[in-house]
Length: 198
Length: 352
Image: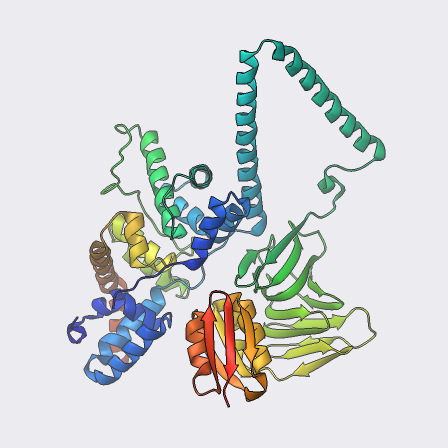
């Protein structure tokens, strides 16, 4: 039961882009800009960095459209490009050793708060707070995967592309995160309800 | 895979199981529906996993307001235009260096261009034409056209969200005026209007005017002589601005049809009427003509019917994010027709 998902709409947009149709860019902005923006803010913590980097990603996409391989999945492609750019900007800022092209292992800090309404939208305020606490116990990469999966709704193949992981590693990483969340958040509520019944 | 040994975490992390919980893939849904029935000893794990998945999955991602997105688009277009202009100029300068004579012409041309620009600006100025309409407080309108086979979600400058269906046009100001929020619709759209008591939200579809303060509802106006308005929550006023007839006031789960110079309440079928905005194609006692126009719009195909008089009866069905093939399998099943799908052409053949 292996799931292969191709995105037909994305492919059509890609063809438009190839044909030099600026409306394709407009479509991409309408469809993906908001998701990219919030992901960028999560990674960089600064809206300006997020906006600047997305702009660069989009302009590069337009200028390199004739030399790029076919992009079948725009969302994961854009996420990956944005992440690479933001990490480059952040590491340049921190004056770390010359730009690290190898992103594996390098992960920006990731944090959740009740204000950003990114997760637990349907929970009560009190539960949201508990969920944030449970999320804060996760590693950065676990936080990122929870965000990509449950907020951005990416599937495993897309997450694998964005985080530069193998599909199996995506599964394992998410499983660890879910296990921890269950222990620190969902089980609390469950035990509570059992005690109530007693 | 031995699902019998699955823990709660295994279920949560299985993508096919996620499809089952969120009804996003029919095959996976059927598989797990069947599996859970045959494995009652796993009911606790499955229910826990389902509950947690539903609590974790975010239903509604935040979308930035449309005026912001338009600004970004304009900005990028400006940068790209500038780059193109720069490249042209570079070529021009390179050629100039090759040929000294051209310096003379370059100055001449530059002078001519400056003169022309000044002349045009002067004419505008003399005629009193306002180059920047914003200064006069006039609204800058945005037109969006959604072709067949596509849908579009727009967040307006007041935070209201509009889902525009296929083959529809919507016109709205980039930012709303001080005293009202007015948009123009041809086709179908679902509105979630941000509440603002002092600034009514008005939708014009031909002569039909739909007024609200804050609520969610659907306007179907593919034909201006037959406009349907259905309310999901809140209160909505529908009136015909060209006729002296009573406006209709609608609340949740009510629907009116504006046709033949009348505004009439009709039966509200079910919430699935709004389903198109979530990718649900829904037929409720639809006849073949209604099915055909829905398919043409939804999938951007051309439908041809052979022996139409043999296809009678009504069609029912609900398809979420399904391909045309799956939908056709569903509605041709137990119906008196067969079909052939080739590229963008769908031929439906009635059977005796």
